[in-house]
Image (cartoon, rainbow, N blue to C red; front, side, top):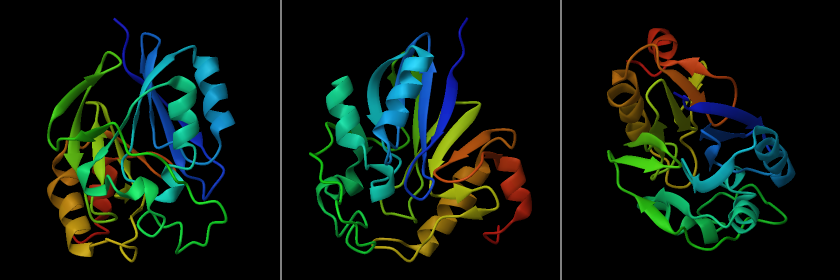
Length: 209
């Protein structure tokens, strides 16, 4: 029986991690940052049919090629309802603060996540865990053996909390009481940098567990 696989693509702006998650030649894209051609090439190499786009959060570096992916693959976008207005608002998604010449301006997402709900897309099952703090609508996608966490947790660090809508108390709670409660061997795929495990980051105790 085929297992769920994940491919990391380091994108062209601030080394943001986009992921293709796939099984049995069906797949989804998570956080399509700047560099659509990289995504397209990886999809072709894997030989998968892309069926949806998932967003861990709506900061500009995670959505720069969102519209290109959505139009090219003719697929829906899923986002937290807390950030449903961010896709078309450069003040919210950070484009204004970082003075982007061409801020991403996209249509609304087709679907909004229900937190702590199990979803089945492209033949794969995952649970949407609320992990706000870096942004108010931050979510993580738990696929069982691995979890995609956006900018909530990194290898040896955690997300910024000085941006629009950020909240350090919420971020700390997300890490301590959501992510660190998961099985230690679970692989963590962050929005920037290399993968890690829940156990490794829990043991480092950088958030003051």
